[in-house]
Length: 248
Image (cartoon, rainbow, N blue to C red):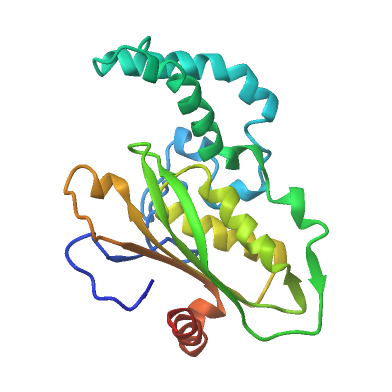
């Protein structure tokens, strides 16, 4: 997908930069410059720090919660006017429940599960880019898919991360209920905290089925978000090199 395409209208195909440190905007945790957060806001973990947290779900939890999920999908079918007892729908609640657990399997993992033995110490300080990483996520507002690609670049300081591990970071955060802006920042912050590179750039291009199948029903809309940290934000030449390479 071409990051350089012109936007069509409003939010469709619009480039939205995720909040980054130092910018006067709403933070990932909901705190806005210029006002004092209330206690409930302060108690919420910042989205950018979630990479450090323990997993919130286990495989044992999946087995325990499966019956209640099945019952919920059965109730949804009845609420839609369907008959859950008819042949074609007999196993649908189970299928839907296990599918939703798979769609959100990122809650079962944490970055430290695989980072400890994946960091390589090499005499390399040139830009590393992996682009067109397939991404599948779920809109947390409508529980419908977000489908797109992720482009990652970082400028190492003699610490490299195995290329497949970058894709794994994308998988962990995308397989959760998400908004695209938060997903973009979480990926960038996780790489920054793990490698301490000179800079990180992440661009996510995605189509939201909540915009395509309902609401405004804009079939060809695309949302592009970016997070630039370190020299990717501070140095225009470094940022332009990254953006040029992911477009070509």
